Image 1 (spheres, rainbow, N blue to C red):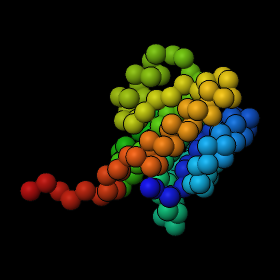
Image 2: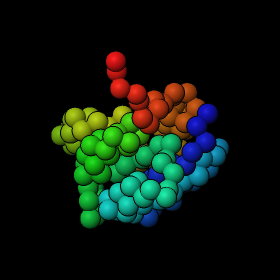
Image 3: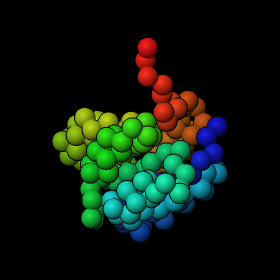
Image 4: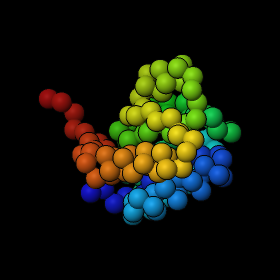
Length: 144
């Protein structure tokens, strides 16, 4: 089990509240830190004094720096490129889906409108990424 924190990058306060409520309802014990824009997310993720999150939940449409910008920066960094990043968005654009995976997202989830469906999606997300998944080490030795 990965008991590290979850970084939720979301600018909509209602979606932040819903996500945290859904995690609580599903008994996900990991602490949730919130970044309300892309720049704040980057500041958290690149602060050498902060521990890296176990999971990043990333919205795409953010002020200051888009979710795509955040994802590009993470994947370009040798230490952070293996962080699990799940796109959690209301976007229905197929181009957003394609670009997210092209930039290295680990998963893409469209936010369900109904709270019960959203809560179930969060339960499954937490079970997989925080309990079942074995993440790679953040730094992998060079191949010989």
